[in-house]
Amino acid sequence: MSLPVAAEKKLSFFLEQFCPDPVAIRNALERTRLCTEVDRLPGETICKRGDRVQGCWLVIDGQVEIRADDQIVTFRGPGELFGEQGLVHVLSGKDGARTADVKAIGPVKLLCIDASFQERLDDREKVIWTLTLAGVINHKLEQATNMRSELRSLAAQHELLLRRFSDGDALGLVKMATSGERPSIQNRRAIVLFSDIAGFSIWSASKAAIEVAEHLGKLAAIQINAIRGSGGQIDKLMGDGAMAYWFVDSDDRERCEPTSALACVLKIASECKAYFEQHGLPLGLRIGLHAGDVSFGDFGAENRIAVTLLGAAVNTAARYEQAKSPELGDIRISPTLRDLMVRSGTNPDTFRGPTRVAVKHDVELDVYSI
Image (tube, rainbow, N blue to C red; front, side, top):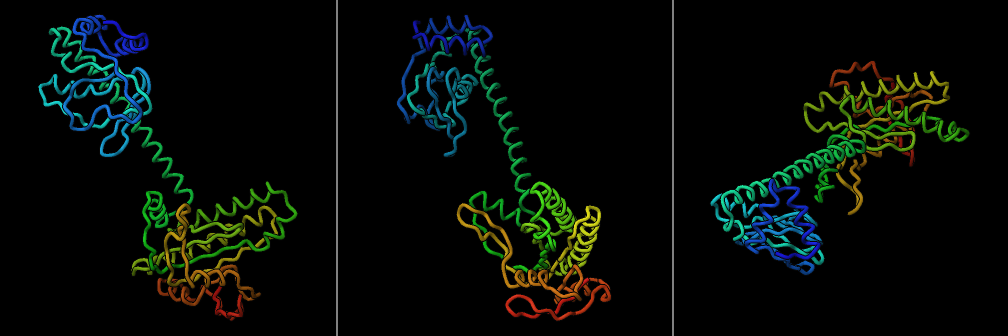
């Protein structure tokens, strides 16, 4: 058997890698002359799923694509064998049928070993050939196992990345959006929080950017950790402020979440005050909270995911944070939410007020504060 130089090199490489006795199989190939070099054009189909097994192929040059159920499974390149599983089925007495589609990617040169080759082998050669095919299959299983491990690692990294940008219910909607689904907008009821570091813009104007960023990051961490620790969900960070929420659209949530939200903002106020004092920062904190009906979902565009809350209750919560009056404490709470908190077990004496305060657009609010 005389093969072109390139085919000879790839065959030798393949046999040395997988065959326990390369000389025996090479002699068998020379004796039977059932090994032929063939060319395939770009996009040409080499075999189809369900076809009868007529041989296997060693890639000499180029690349082939393996597909199953209209999905790309893998690619095979120079020095790699494909189609061997069908030959193993035939050797084991089963009906041989292709389980995948294979086509050429660009021009491809192949060495085709006819299925009748293994019928011409003596007993010893047949054992060697079977071990060769088994070695190829085991190698591919190892590759698949490594690939699955890499995919699991990538999936875990992807999950961690998503969790860096979204929480709880929002995370579920983000995952749906990244998979191409467009979830419906939900009508929910929520406690909405807005926070702001008072005096931060004036203070930071004369400071180095690295100093501003360091303090901002630590103040954000205080808020994020407290909100997540109380079961709340971060909607977004906005400069030196934050927006968060707790859903209260079930009896159980309405009993538990108002108390959790109150404990959260008390913790934030205490830790931020201690931070300001520790670092000598001339800053303060404002937190506004309100409860009401909201629309929750992905309000982004085709190539931009934007899961958030919208609605009058969100705007009103922001107004409570922005309320200005010397009679107000750091934490400002709407009458609606104050009633929820009292019903969930909070002592009414916790709150001062209400105080009537004028806010944006000549709107007046009754504000309870702590």
